[in-house]
Image 1 (spheres, rainbow, N blue to C red):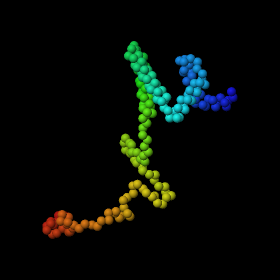
Image 2 (tube, helix red, strand yellow):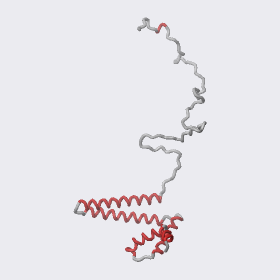
Image 3 (tube, rainbow, N blue to C red):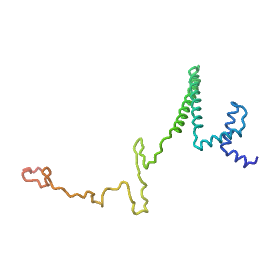
Image 4 (cartoon, rainbow, N blue to C red):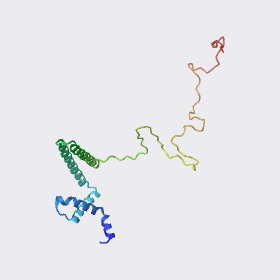
Length: 190
């Protein structure tokens, strides 16, 4: 087998997976035909490509059950440990198995009930101060910046949008006048 052919074979993920799976399966199931095993992997991949996720779902639930069994066995061994470092090692591995079990079940739940996808223009999510830039600032080469989201609500500089006329003064709001002599102090302090 020449170098190029070996590289092409090594680059195929199906064959790498079959070789690795064969190494783990041989002690459990005896001598397997690697080509038949690789063909089975191809059939599983074809089912997934067609949208049939039942194989993946059953694999994940079996893995979760195995991880739960590992957690319980290691936690049980920790309670019967004579030495602190032995107990700590068993508990550390038990909690890792528990975390992996949870992650596996979370993955299974995500496959069964995928989150809805929302395409939003802007999402304001922050735990503290947040700056929101709704648009890209115009480049200096542009004369007219166009529709800016935070423009002043004025027609022209100094002219307000309120086009109503001024109201006449009422009883409770007399027009302004100078202060009459009656209300002025007699002696100005100064």
